[in-house]
Length: 392
Ligand code: CMC
Image 1 (cartoon, protein in one colour):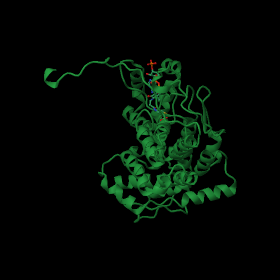
Image 2 (cartoon, rainbow, N blue to C red):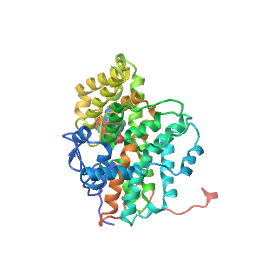
Image 3 (cartoon, rainbow, N blue to C red):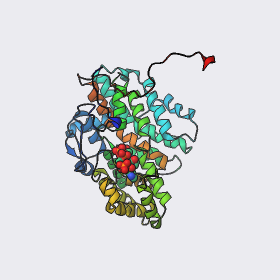
Image 4 (cartoon, protein in one colour):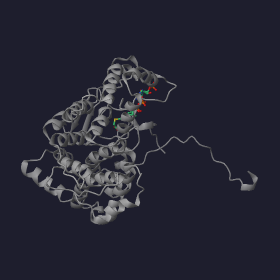
């Protein structure tokens, strides 16, 4: 009993207090622990961002080195887990593999499932930040039928990930530092985004006391949808489908047509009613990657730039405040880095893991935390009597 508010999609419900990430959707501002995303992406690296999200402050040089070493110590996956992959069909979507394998971490690292122990909570956090690239790279290697490449802890976080994805035993492969820096920046951009659908899923799962690995697996499952993390894959598919500049107008018209379910993927955001600050950095990163690789003509990029130009000056999009979001340019960039479209959301999950964990830890450590339990407006049948099956 008692009054409650009907709020489908939770557009006006604050589900928690948080000190981690701040978004001003009207201004297009994104801060991690108070620091603007632009500054972190330009000056910092991903592990520094991880430290910041988990501990609340930027690390000193000693703290940073210690953190990097601690993450590095956990990059290997239990060998039995590596065998887990072969249970999946070869053509399984790598996100399906991620949901399964990350959930299964709880079966291998029992010690960190004790959420009442602060030390174990941090060990679980480090384990996931460290192992996610290894799991993601294995999911990729499995899907293309190549042997797994084990982590090389001499390399930085992003460079190690690229090496695990793209080196093959028979060939010499050296990670291009410009591309590794771009990968690292993409991870920073995706690291956290306050109470989005997957983070709320992680918190809701965690509110029952579930172990952190299970909670992150729940977050990955939620992220997979095309309205959320799956949008980067969908955006690139859309740019390919549009194909050339002549077709742009037709697709803009489709997006505006109320009777057509088509939406411009990579456009619009629940919170940003201004340019998504991450999209701007992603656009610059996209150009840097294409330049480095000497890619001069990318039809998908041409279509994206034209689409953005038309949409930003079109009354429909202006009125509804629909701007490009992070996913608009990320697909083109990730494809240029060498990833197939099925891997895009996996990379999002890899990077978002630290945000999910930071949010999970914050929740578990909040003394006012209660199990998440939304109410509903019941619109079904009123009470009625059971009718015997032969009399229906
Ligand atoms: N193309 C055309 N029209 C759109 C679009 C779009 N991409 N997005 C929203 N609209 C229209 C929508 O039809 C609605 O119009 P009306 O008021 O006339 O019914 C209005 O704008 C508001 O849309 P909404 O669906 O009520 O807004 P929402 O806050 O529930 O949804 C969204 C936000 C991101 C799911 C939505 O904009 C969308 O589907 N975008 C495409 C998918 C996408 O790019 N997702 C990635 C989000 S950023 C990364 C992440 O966080 O995962």
